[in-house]
Length: 107
Image (tube, rainbow, N blue to C red; front, side, top):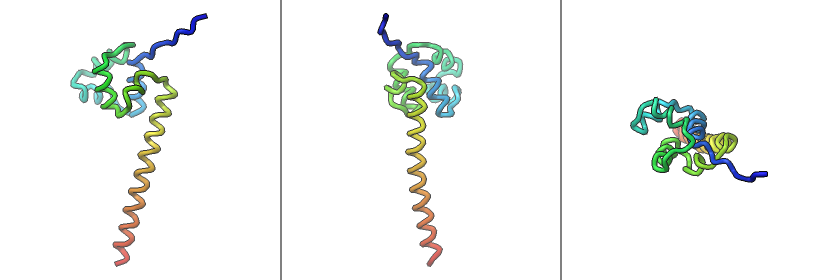
């Protein structure tokens, strides 16, 4: 019985994260300075160079480790957590703006 762990398919992980971020291949390609076809080919590769992966992680706004050692459930969980954090921040901002507008209207 083998206990070897499978290496993650980095291209597939990039594709999943990009899709979850609602980013098109064209958008990622433009940010990387490459063609959409090059992004498509990259997402089909199991291995991606470390420097390219670091640039992609920055563009997708995820830690490099998320791309390197994750599965689909982890990616989705990470993105949902990020969206919740942003939603909570925006909720506080909106509440503050409403309060300021209320003060202004009471003058």
